[in-house]
Image (cartoon, rainbow, N blue to C red):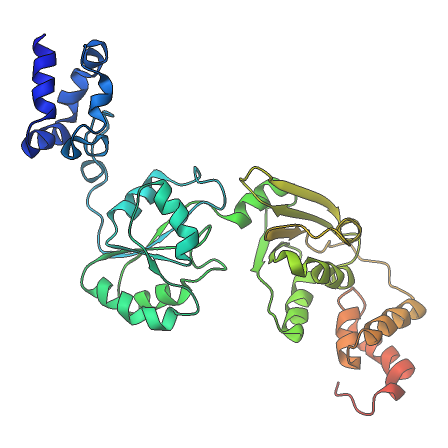
Amino acid sequence: MLLRGWFQSMVVSSSSISATIRWRGSFCSVYTSALRSASVPYRILYAPHPKLAFSSCSIDHSPSESSKQGTLKPGLYLVATPIGNLEDITLRALRVLKSADVILSEDTRHSGKLLQHYSINFQLSYHKFNEAQREQQVLKRLKDGEIVALISDAGTPGISDPGTELAKLCVSKGIPVIPIPGPSALVAALSASGLSTNEFTFVGFLPKHAGSRKERLLISANEAATQIFFIPPHKLSQFLEEINCLFGASRQCVMAREMTKVHEEFWRGTVKEAQEAFLTNQPKGEITFIIEGKTTCVDEIPSESELENDLREMISKGNSLSEAVKLVAAGSVRRKTIYSIALRKFGNQFESEDN
């Protein structure tokens, strides 16, 4: 038939016909149904010739990205990527990644899986250990008018991930920084937690230094807002012990792990129940830990003997007198009262302790 002969000649023709197909998507789509029933196999559209590969043909009826969205302006694009399921990526994110002159990735081995899945080839490692080394190199490319996309291993760049310093540098140099929103572990976990979402504080990863950790946890323990942490699995036991002391055993908490993946899990219960459940059972994968804020009701004031026992426990764990007072004072009792008890009962154990 005429259609068959025309189509066969089109397949073996030059690149100019490939351009015709790409530019005139509506013309191609008119013949889609006819080609399905023609004696020429429809699969011929996919790749009988490199110039006529399906990826370069507007056979899907949709207008090209450039005509639909306009040309991307030069700048730094912070592109959110899936936290587990590769399908959780936006169309806009894919368009930016495919249009970028270079893609900065936190870990090229990890990000490579996503980019390979969507046939995106550009990569350049960029993480907190080589930020200073890469910054000037990246800055030069941005000043030259290139489109630079930054992705993290999962979620949004700069949120408990590398990228903050580069974004700050670009802002200081007047270079556009464009967010491409998408998946976020903290928002996903909070939305499904069942705890209050009216007000929350995202703490992220706690400091490694013991003193800084306690200081941050003391602040969180006394906030009315829901608190959100990122906890490595090997530090969960220590973290639960810390919040049991500072937040109290009865606080409701939620642990989310492997979100959007096959083995997604949400554990819910009190801090005490969490300690019992994970005493010997260390979960796999990073944990998004959410705990309810401090209630506004006035707690029953503990007796002096109860405060003394709490202080003794804190001191037995290696805390100094002042540190023990801070830890016990995370509750509703005034610190001055506790310190008075501490000096009277345990002052002789310490030669000198600053107030």
